[in-house]
Each structure stands twice: as C-alpha cells, then as structure tokens.
Amino acid sequence: MSPEDQVELRRLRWRARRGMRELDVLFNRHLDHAWATDSEAQRGVFLRLLDCEDDKLWRWFMGYEDVPDAELKAFVQRILALPH
Image (tube, rainbow, N blue to C red; front, top):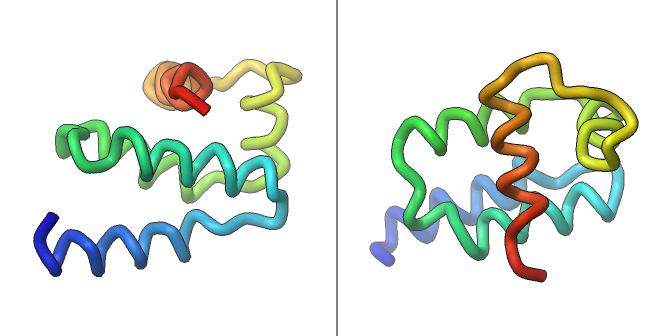
C-alpha cells in the first residue's frame, strides 16, 4: 500500500467512527478486509453509506428496517458477510 493509500485509509477510519461501537467494528472490518481491493464504484457506495445517519445504519445492519436503496442494501449485506 502506498503512503497516499495509507493516509486515505487513516482518514476513512476517522470518518467511519460512529456513536456506536458496533458500527465502528463493522466499518473497520470493511476497511480491513475489502477497501484495498474495492472498485471505485464500490468505494463510492461505501462513502454513501458513511453519509447515512447512525440510527438508520444501526437498524439496517441489525435487520430491523429494510434499506431503501438497492446499492446500499447490497453493501450492508456485503459488510455483514465479511469475516470477523
């Protein structure tokens, strides 16, 4: 990973910090396991997910509420399927 990529990853880790530890774990799992190999389109969906409100994210990840956007829904499922 280039120094520029490492800086970007640190910036994303900071941006992915949420008010809930569970969301922090999920987002960091994605950054650890998938970010480096994600396409630009996948990275864009992840960034859109980061723009969502914590309470919505919590309900989506816990399955309490359906994700209204198909791309975001697929991405939530992708994150949930990552190894722990």
